[in-house]
Image (cartoon, rainbow, N blue to C red; front, side, top):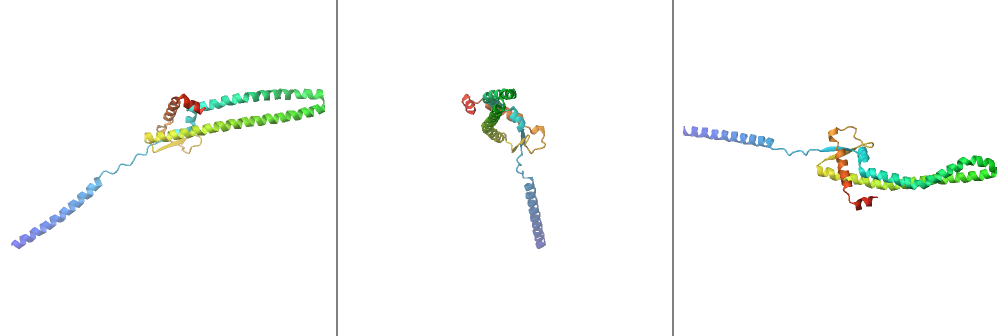
Length: 202
């Protein structure tokens, strides 16, 4: 009888052990399922309308005004020469009739040469100003890109896209538009630049 009881107890213990192992295994599975998943980093994105940025960025406007004034200043003397040439060319027909064919041919060749020289001078002036302004504009654009990169890192953006005439983003919700923020930050930075810095940019 004792042996039967003993055998029964052994079976019970064995069964309990099996159940305990199953419960432990299930518990581990449940715990592993409930383990907090590492949070996926939020992809924070925004975009900047580059065409609006360049229109409203004070430094870009100042640069445009600077070269417009420079163009007018350098072109003033050339414009005076062109005006004299036009006046002379306008009176050429009447003078040609009074001074004869030989004079007309010589004077006509002189006027043609001067017209070519004035045209070349205009072209050279335009190229000089374009090269000068191009260098400064490239520097400005490079500075803006660097600023946006720093701004993006500081504000925790994963991406900041550019839109505008040459951009590839065809649609984006207005809430992701940070153009005004960037313009304000850039203008504040430009405004607070020391006179020495401002002078160096001229």
